[in-house]
Image 1 (cartoon, rainbow, N blue to C red):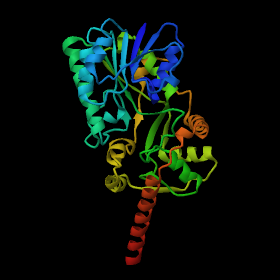
Image 2: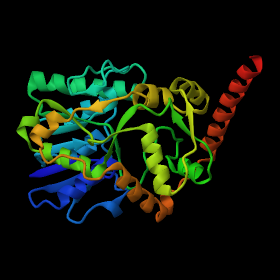
Image 3: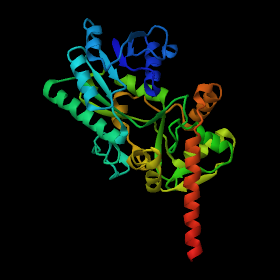
Length: 344
């Protein structure tokens, strides 16, 4: 079996490539710009190209056929339209990475299945993913284009600690706040439920769908089995750091408004995603991939990531602008509480 991954070096795709590179049944190819050659496993073939240069990629692939093509960096309809032109007739399965954030917001019910309506008025990212799905499914229905749609939720790896609120440089600054004993902002009251998935667990579900004819024309969500509150998530991180958690609660609506002047899209990331309490029902996936289960629980995954980050300076990206923003948000809410109390 021959697979082509467009991208192949991100949080999700790295684990999938690693898993397939150890499987003698798969011949693995990557198409990307070659910026992260150091993490590509031995035996994996690489095509150096920019997928957005359609003519050059078409020429590069003109004599190649694949059993599976997976695009991990298609975010807008024009990208999947390009992939359709490039890979129509050249693959037996085209796997599109959509997003669980595409499910209806606000949620009508907290249990989410693949049949849950897609609609997200709060996040352009999600609306674009929905539009990509609609294009690909129309091509499946009208022409038999062999699409499989994948909807991940919050997938992480050893290079990052998943947080609800962080700045442009990722979650490292929140770790520094925890270590310093500073208050850490948690959206809402921290009681909404959320799923975390370590990337090597995600790879089991994903690779089980590759080359599976029963997955053609279908959508699958791939998440871990653990559902944790955000309070549990942040407490687990603090426990792994060996520090007390100084939680500070701020409404998601307030954070969305306070973030806008600073370029933080918390309306999309929170109201359109993480602030919603959800339970993902993975029964459909497990019928096709019964070995899919959580093997790296969040408490273990956090420690794996903290150890990795501690030994890799490139992952230690401080973010003083976000740190200052947190302090201002907290000070503003404290001032408002004091003003109300003073008027009593």
